[in-house]
Image (cartoon, rainbow, N blue to C red; front, side, top):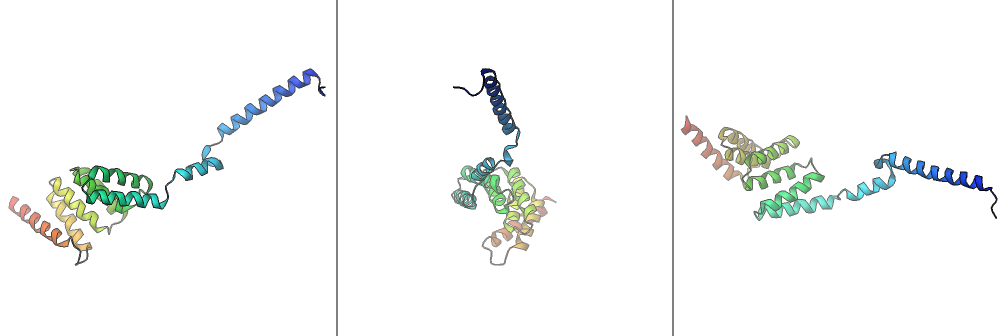
Length: 175
């Protein structure tokens, strides 16, 4: 036994269908970033600090093992999540330098010094990359900055001073 006449039931069914359609349309128009479900999904995709640290440590291990392609992949992941991390830029530069990509390496060392001007090892890497590009004057300037910023007991300082002496002699002999 129906309470509504047949015409009223058809009208009600059409009204419900229209409301469902309009509700679906409204849900698709609302930007996903503002819905709580989308926000929790975006948070789930964002890495935790531990993920960034784990990828960074993997990159360092690969860099020391001279597995430069793997180091590049790890530091790429770190930079994807932490683009303002100067240490990741420096290590990406060293990995690229290991692959012989001097120009790209120099770009990463530059970006590290832009993010943190006192990042001494970025100047060391920049000097090595500039030497690889044949820019000894630039290499000398970068290595002098490294020596200036590094403490006297830095284990790489003697090598840096030796490179400076060698490059300065090469520049003198070209005159």
